[in-house]
Length: 234
Image (cartoon, rainbow, N blue to C red; front, side, top):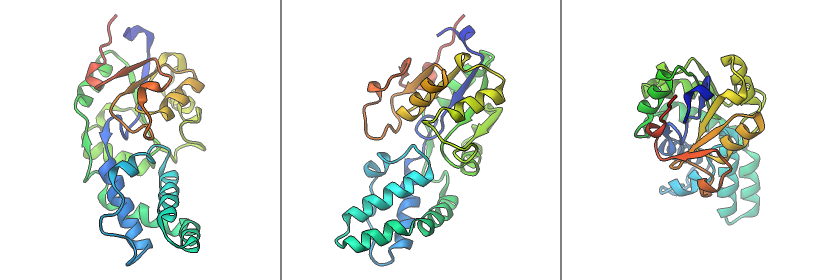
């Protein structure tokens, strides 16, 4: 990959730099235990179920969880009541996630090396995630990744979230770079669709969360098994 093609890179967070699935599972199960006292089984949601719902922001994750749980409940009215109680459930999720952010997560192998490669090539770096900004900033700091980025934007930083192109276009604007010279690095069709619509080249990692779909079926410019594989040459 020729680093002279790029002035900057935008890097996704969940599923790209940090495996946060354990955080999501823990926060959602705590949310459900609070929302359904005495009725939510101790085993709770499993990681495979949650993984399919991750990627489009916290609101989407909570709504998808409530729909999934509602469909598992015997009473149609109970399911309707659960889904209608979104505001209370979302507030509970936010509160529980605040308490466990980063505790059940880990940086993927090769991430620091890959970010250093991008920095050494002279690229400006931004983190762009659909995770709420406060959670993203805290997680990056907890995992020692905050020093790599000049800009960090979350799912509540702009009017719309990925896969809408607006967050990428706004991030490019803040970086002072054109989309065509700004590489998007992500893990899912959300990142690829946003990049395509914004006019950014896009590379996807093969290990993240792609809504249960094979990531190599996504329209992208390349795939890597680790950020350490980012070799930028003249």
